[in-house]
Amino acid sequence: MEYLEDKRAMLKVKHERTADCVVGGFRWHKSGRPLVGSLLLGLYDSSGRLHHVGVTSSFTDATRLALAGQLEAYRTTSFEGHPWAATGQGDGPRRPGAQSRWNAGSDLSFEPLRPELVCEVAYDHLQKERFRHATTFRRWRPDRVPESCRYDQLASAVPAELAELFGSAG
Image 1 (tube, rainbow, N blue to C red):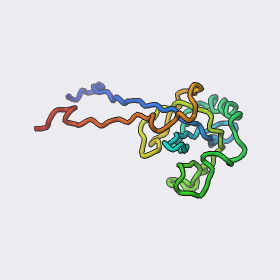
Image 2 (cartoon, helix red, strand yellow):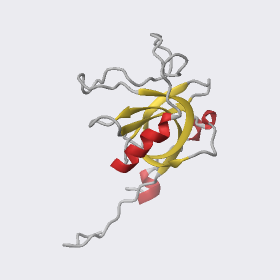
Image 3 (cartoon, helix red, strand yellow):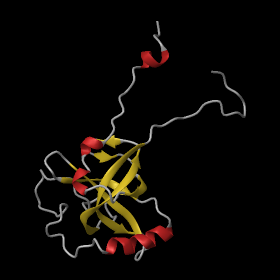
Image 4 (cartoon, rainbow, N blue to C red):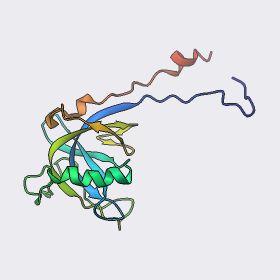
């Protein structure tokens, strides 16, 4: 392919992956209440433990305000019995709220929700057991039960061999 001045001659194509996730909590917006800043997402592992896998925060201010009302019915006043309650055990699932390794001064506290809501999010990449970048909210999934939101639903892109794509170098 040759360079064409002032012309876009190539396209970048990405495969969009989506996942259905449990909403286990939320954080208030940096400007404060009543705006929701982000939803905390979870996936169940094969043993039935809910792991915190990332957040989604791509909302307009109008949606952030509406979310506060929608989530009210799922709020719980206590972490007791919540799957992300701190237990002090190192072998449990990933939990939000721990100190940030990137910004020690940031407040990562969150409001727990009963893990009954399911939403679909788009994601770019999964690194280990966590979304590598923030996800994009797509829609609520009232047709899904939270226990069906498991790691095994995630699409894994199989790397193609360069020789298959471009032919042999020799």
